[in-house]
Image (tube, rainbow over all chains, first blue to last red; front, side):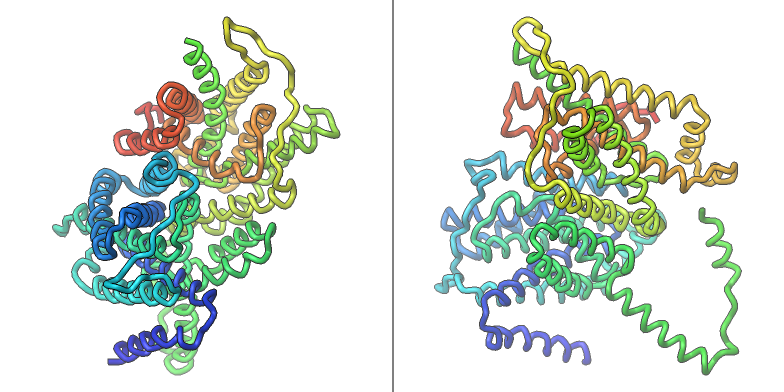
Length: 334
Length: 284
């Protein structure tokens, strides 16, 4: 009941904002935030819930964007392109995921990064199809008879995607699949000993996360109307991870908050020109040092502390000293 | 034949540089099980520092200074930023090393500016071998890489410090119990790998236009070299680097230069899938 009310309020705000904000700069920024948040939700499902590190979701964004650009130049229709993006991503994600997901830890991280770089290298190399390193322009798409050209169109389109994607992810983690994912993250061997086909579940979530990323690529190509390989390098994949970490590990709301904060930081350091790289690096270091559990993690600890200070006063006698079991498990680590 | 020889020579010189950067990765991974993605920026920092210093002091002095300063930079970065996150999940550590890469890139930009620079060759001239020229500088690169890797190997295998270093890699807890300061060794590994990065940057600085953006490319190539070598022993990384260098130069010389990166990255993926422990199984 309460959650439904919050959601309705958010939807009303999203619908209302373009009537309040005239400037296309702010609407454009909100559009990009929605696109980033959408891609990061996919990563959060894979990384925050499934515990599988991916530095390669930028590669799927590139895939979605390039499929959109190439097909739009062939005069394809909006819904057909959307369908093709989904189909192609599914095929690529299955082909890539099957061998890669057997790797663990660092090797998985490097393999996914290698995949993202491979997609970028392919986009540069296949210049007759992709325009090479100089990029490719995207034809404006048509939904029924409405040609998408105004910022407002893209704003609404991407926020619809974000809200639907968010609700989907939110419900998914409450189902069996979500619980299985969390069990894989905490102990994969134990999960498979309980009869869970962990490989299959990992595969499903990898494909789903790739789908989120490539649909974000679809939105991005539509909105920017021009894409080039340099937009999809190393940095894009890392930015997704940063937004996910910034939001908090294993929290569905995290990516949205993370996208807002990170986009805000990136937009404001833009004016620093030559100092931009240094400052963004230092901000990133500060986030990692001082917010290891993200903003939601920070909020959670603050709330916990406040609650504890309340309970200490009233129920002081019931507090247990440090339990011997946790002490023991701590000391066995190095 | 000419193309073949030319590719062979450029492949070997390129590969030995990748190998040296890869050695830095391997050393850090060896003792602290972290892949230090900031590695490539020490290459750039060392090279640019050397180029600037060598304009007003003897080259040898400039090189030594650049190597030492990059090593100290590596130590400081470990102490300040890596150690606080060493208990956190791996993804935080990976992103932290990347954050250091970005920060150092920013520092390099502010200190040395945007322009690409190149150094005077240590020794001008070339050897003529049939129809192809081999620059003396290429021979110097090879010689330095071989000497450095031999020294490193000697140091790791024969000295007591090296033995302590290896103990930390194999079993940190027992190493700690026998009085080895594991944390200090880890810090030390970052220092050496910073210096190795700087050395590789300095020896190719006469052959390569260097600017502040070169870091990430070197990270990726060095990483591939290290993985080819199995992330175990430093010598493995050198061989891995040579394999990568030869593959890259033959692929671009004989097949297609446009698809060079595609082939290298596909090679990496295939390798990771079939031989995640490197091409020399059982080396570590």
